[in-house]
Amino acid sequence: MNPMPTEIIDSVELARRWNVPVSWIRSKVQSSRTSRTDQIPHVQFGRYVRFEWGSVSLEAWLEEQRHGARKATHRGGGPMLLSAERK
Image 1 (spheres, rainbow, N blue to C red):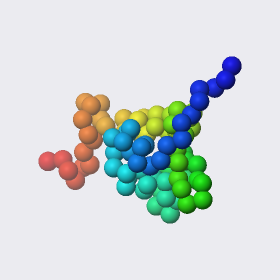
Image 2 (cartoon, helix red, strand yellow):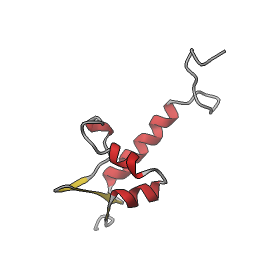
Image 3 (tube, rainbow, N blue to C red):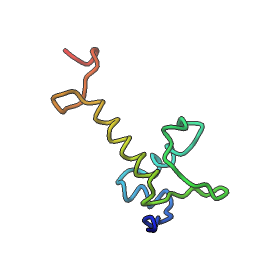
Image 4 (spheres, helix red, strand yellow):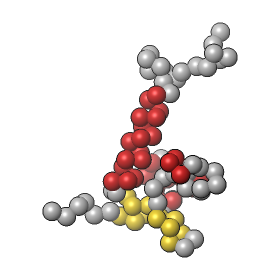
């Protein structure tokens, strides 16, 4: 049984599909700004960065980000306020 085929896309296309700015995608790839574990899985072709749409690694990274976002909310479902923000 063959695994699902992946599609090679660029930063602009990934940003469009995820509905985020291209600058955010690029910042999540640059190793000097982002820790290795927080980087979006990508393939480097010289100076060109591409993403494997439909790959297990990209899906796993996205799922991890979803779980991380849930941890930043309190039980009531809204954003968690820091003690300095509470009145």
